[in-house]
Image (cartoon, rainbow over all chains, first blue to last red; front, side, top):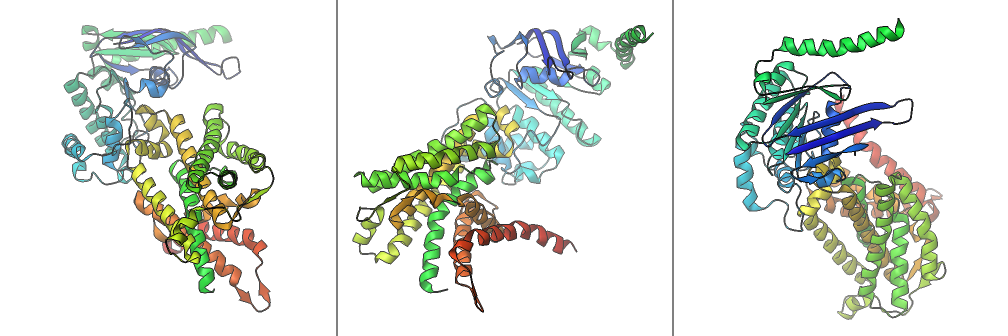
Length: 264
Length: 295
């Protein structure tokens, strides 16, 4: 369960560059919800996910993960409850460590680290089994440094690592945007499979309206730091790209109208 | 170069090699250029010398030195992580402060250890000739430090240290507090540097506040020479390369100082110039090699 209550966030408050990034966001995700998040550039999608992950603290409002209030928890502490996959495939893995070392790091997400061996012999078989799911042949390359892998391979590995310890919520920040279409399709299929098989509560940012409609059971549209549209169940099933675009233009039209008022 | 000079250079390479391992940890693994070492090397020397002259066991004095260096490193890392002071600046501040602190510890600019028991006496008592005692003790400590670091980097915490330097965002998302890792890592690095300083002081029979001058440059030179000559494919190889790099560096210095071209000779005071030139050569060699091979 994830809950956001009256989240407000300004960037550069009080300066000429002031940005009202999140404007009174209220959100409640049930266990197993798969939410797709869309919105134009600067709508606050990434800001919302970063806020949940703890990259910064909100100016006001409360964040709940599980049953606890985590509003003041630093990022590393929340990491025990949250898994993230970033847009940049390089951000999710450690290039100078080997594949097995990376997986061992992820297998301890949110736990105390000790002076025991980083990669134990018994881990390897489990890592191989998990890597086999990817179908990329990485199970035979446990000792290769991750820096040698392609962006797509690294992103696939990151997806796998994100779920080695089951998170309360999985945050996907445009995680296929930097990949070529074929690899992107592969990672997206992998995402769907992992999310479904482990029944993960998931938030996925996407710029692709088709994906936003076809994936998940709930859809959020953000605009200027507010939730403009929140559809679930049958409302989302019957949604078309055309409907979404209309909503988009409606929102932007408001803006235009206000501009013309000001300028006229 | 005489055999005697070569032996001395290897000896120095081994003992300063412990410092180089520390520099490798911050500079390469944690990606934290740390100038604190110019102050923590004499700090280790001062702590050890003062402890010995007030009757502390010489081995215990090494531990005290290590602890002192660890604290100095922690101060630098604390200033950097908690107060967002640039790492270079934070380390310069600690280094400058250590100059005064070291004089306070020694109650003057230097402390002599003439006639006091040192870690070398135990070895000479075993029958090792005194001019080999340094080699044996330094070799032993250097091997211990390299082995310990290779072991440590393979542990769960060691892997977190590696990841902190490599990809801080990734390791934060895995639930590691990178501030704590940096504070610990820079502390450990300076602990090793202080240990190196303490051994040097016991060997040369004195601690001096000026003995840390240029430590970071010698450390960087050794790290880079080690990487260029011996490679750094695995963790074990990288640490051994750093140690060997230190020996090559000291040999190169000894060679340069013994050089005679017609009437020209280098003075010991030319050491800094030679070091700077060595570092420059070592830094541009990989680049030049790539360009020449690309043709």
